[in-house]
Length: 443
Ligand SMILES: Nc1nc2c(ncn2[C@@H]2O[C@H](COP(=O)(O)OP(=O)(O)OP(=O)(O)O)[C@@H](O)[C@H]2O)c(=O)[nH]1
Ligand SMILES: [Mg+2]
Image (spheres, rainbow, N blue to C red):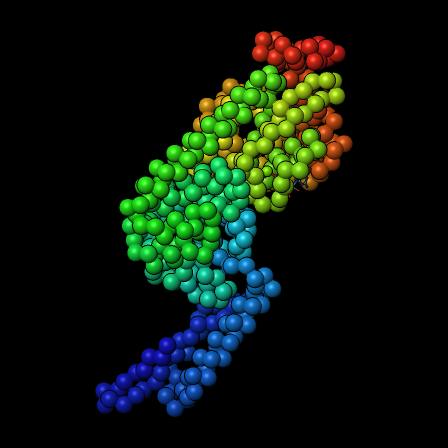
């Protein structure tokens, strides 16, 4: 941009030139040259702009370093501490990664009140736009929930795609849903969450949901107009009910076996599926991604002392899960009520382990499962010092293991046999346990 002084005589004075800067170590976003005499002004603007654009491209490529994934800027606007915001953005980056999106940069703005229209302050939002050019990002992911009006306003001002944490989680679920029930559940949650957005024009909607949001099973349906959304929701709910009936049937059949049920619960990525596999020699999908497992699976587990139980693995938990999503997964989560014992698997190597445990406990409370006995399983002990593991065991009355290392499971199995015996040998439903476990010592 060039501004030109004009003298009283109408003749041009000096020029003031501002231009954007590519990514640079000083973190500068623009360059301003003030008071340039008009005769010294760069004459060939076209080639200047061309070389600036080339430089932007080059630094964007260098920034990406061969990573061809879509790039996003993660944003948190919070009245809380910077440290908490950083932790939360670290988790948001993991979520983005699980969704196939690279976090190119993180922006935290401490504000006691959000800007009602743009959430961020306007000056900050404009800086974010320049930053997106510098790092080659075309997506903004907000850690806080946005209203449809805010998403639209930000998308219009920045000409970038805009989503919030909830949409990101819904998108991961959409990508990871495999079973018919899982797909129905996710589409239902997506439609419910996006319903208020459908009031806008379709271009705003596609900027909000095109690209990353909308690759899932709900993909075509995001385009349908609002009038038909309610019909679609009703239809999905009906289908889901009939699928759920099949699940109830399987559940009753399982109950007829009169075997105790152990359910593995825990924060996403804690190693629940790895543990199920290790205990039962199974091949449930394990991935270093959040929400790798959406569909529950059950296996029989036979303990050395002839004690047999059913062990189940299910969808992971996370703090602030979208309520529509929890509601849609209600029937999956309801299966947890069958559990006689919950194995709460914790990633003991995660610095936010305490927050994770609290989030899991809160969800269990919401599911009305305060009373179900539980055992804390401190997983990934290979990542921490043995003394730390021993302390954690004492603190949580838990058992430290590494699901990667079968030898470390012997203590858990031993412990479980004891707990199950202790809790269930008097239970009339499991006449079989006492019989099967005839050799169990009573002490
Ligand atoms: N270092 C270490 N990594 C582990 C251990 N157990 C599991 N992992 C890794 O942790 C990641 C997540 O494991 P999963 O078993 O998929 O975790 P999950 O709890 O089922 O996760 P979701 O289904 O996504 O909720 C994978 O990369 C595993 O290889 C362990 O004992 N030590
Ligand atoms: Mg899993």
